[in-house]
Picture 1 (cartoon, rainbow, N blue to C red):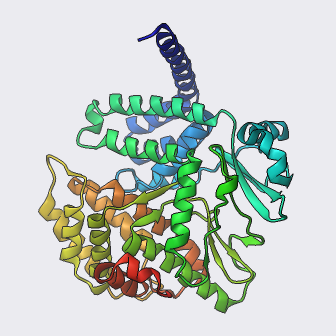
Picture 2 (picture 1 turned 30 degrees about the horizontal axis):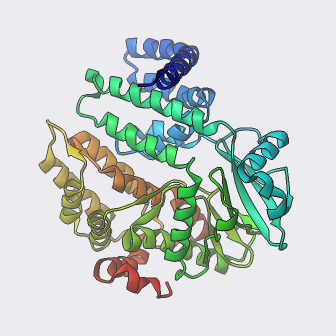
Length: 441
């Protein structure tokens, strides 16, 4: 190793050590009082109250630790297969509650990204963002031909900060995996997948690829609009795309008939991702699923997307098809076949029996009475109780569907999730993505 290399490694180690000390200090300040209260509850036998106190403190802790930990918490909120539902509910409430990038920093970031081309590419860039998050801010701009553009500008220094924090998180997971309390749990795998998901949201080149791919895949779904990427204006730290006017996250101002069409298009889009293409947007919270008054469903922000293997895509489709027709035993077998692992003391037969019963109880329920969230939550509880660990490649896509269930129900309370899935599943299992792409859904 050269002197420069040794010096660079030493500086990184020092920075990592300082950040680790800072993280430990914040953990002590936030969790210390909560842990003392929780211990008091445990002493008197109130285990659930003790857990509740710690769950309530977790979002505050992650917020104070910074954007990397907030993003990590948002991803972990989807892991209802391994984390208690109450903790996931608390984590799901985490928001990127951060101020906009200062205009001087925005100007500096743009100048660094475009250099001398900045003034020749853009006629105007608004310094006040239309949206601000922990990783980036979105600004309206106008190119020299008069076209309106959305510029997603990465916060200066965020990539280095997240890289350092993710290293610490991975090391912490490796240590935690050795503790008896986590025996049998794939801790390093869960945390590794989480870190990969968080890191991917900083890679704007990859997100541009994902947006273009999603735009192609969903081009045949009626009323669905994925913004076109402006490759000529993209840079490593800036993602440029067409600007879509008049976005509405609720669609409550439009006619009931149009709301139903919105719900159907949004649901078919997710099914298309899951069952036909296998390329899934895993972060379709209300901020990334919008509507326009002219009648389109708009899908944004593909930074957290997953490609299913063809085997897992087909197993996923087969699971939903068997659920829709009431074949509970086959659903249970698919969960076991696709599992990331089975614990040493796993009760596979018990899981198969209970899972079969879960499908039987939910099959044929009226649309208003069937809850996908309720079904998945009970399935995850059965997996944890019986030592069957689901593959993260299936969990993240499934949770993408759970995230939008509430929004779809608000738009169309009578929509039938199982019946709507059947024609898309059939094309996914017995057609090909290429032949399905040209069809209108």
